[in-house]
Image 1: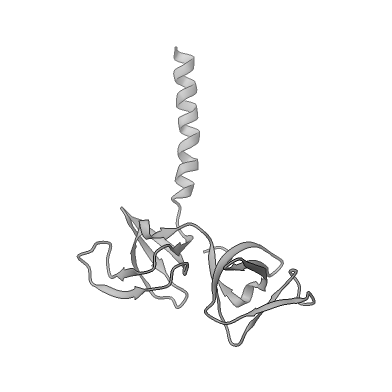
Image 2: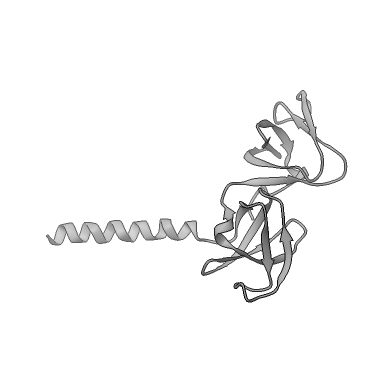
Length: 154
């Protein structure tokens, strides 16, 4: 009986750090609703600073408080979102001036698949050697990592 209890305690002790890693901040998230209010504080009693109407938009989660997440957007704006309205799905947004070439392979000499305008949001895939897989509504190609916000460590 003692051996079984000791095994249970050991398994529990190993499981807790793994679960805690899921809760570590900062981390990337994405808006998972069509409209979300950014508030000055972590409660509906705080005033609304901004209303975001862009599902899939990436944000950095900097802090957590109960069901709320303190986030930063690509412009550096910070505020509180309701946590359940975010997803851990990795997305990114095209930044910079002019169109960003989307390549068939992760190098500048690869054939052009299409061009993405600044502001386009897509699902982020693997990144390697300064390039990231980027999927916009089922059209996937490679984009230079310096043309997107949402990749790398938060």
